[in-house]
Image (cartoon, rainbow, N blue to C red):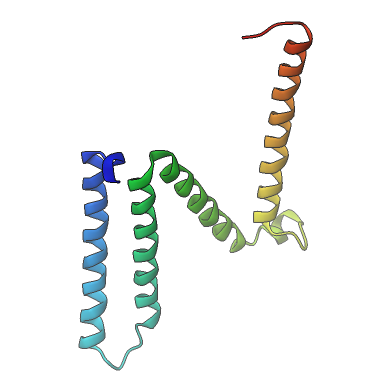
Length: 132
C-alpha cells in the first residue's frame, strides 16, 4: 500500500506530523497554563490540520496522481476562500457576484474552449485521414 511513497515523501510527511505534534503540545500547554482563556478556536484549527494532513498522507500513500489531484482541489478551495474575503466586488463593480464564482466561471469557459479546440483538431484530422 505504501509503495507509492518515496524516501523524500516519507520524510516530508514525518516532518508535517512532527510539526502537528508540536502544535498540539503547544495548545495543550496553553490550555493548562491559562485555563481562564478560551483556546477552542486554536484547538479546532489544529484538529482540522490533523484531518487535512491525514487525508493528504493517505492520498500520497495510495497514488501520486491522487495526491496531485487532492492538492489541486485543496489549493482551489483555499484560493476560493481567500477571494471570498477580499472586497473586490466593490472595487471592480461586480455587485452580487463573488470573485470566486467569477474565477470559477473563467476557468470553466477557458477549459471548455480548450476542449472544443482539441476536439475540432481531432475531427479535422479524422476527416482528412490523418491519424497519429
